Image (cartoon, rainbow, N blue to C red):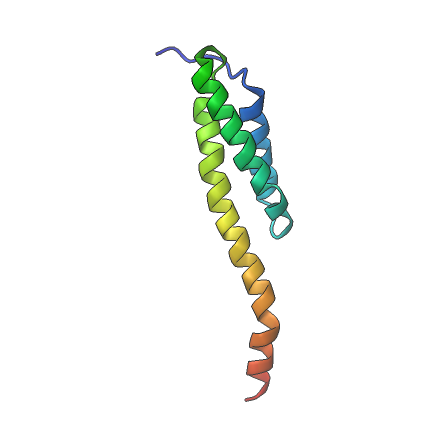
Length: 91
């Protein structure tokens, strides 16, 4: 199967969203965009295979979910730190 150039704008946008989602704490705002654009790009690449971008779209969806999970853990830690510091002060 020959490699074709990625002419799927949604998949390239999804990859950009994934890149911005890597910013700690603030990146959680970009995860839904990565998932949405990745899904749109995947549907477009299935309907019109000549535009390419199927692998980039699937990668964006998978990385978007993983980064969203990591961002949620970071936010949970940020929420719990004051509680943990109050518990440590009691010793």
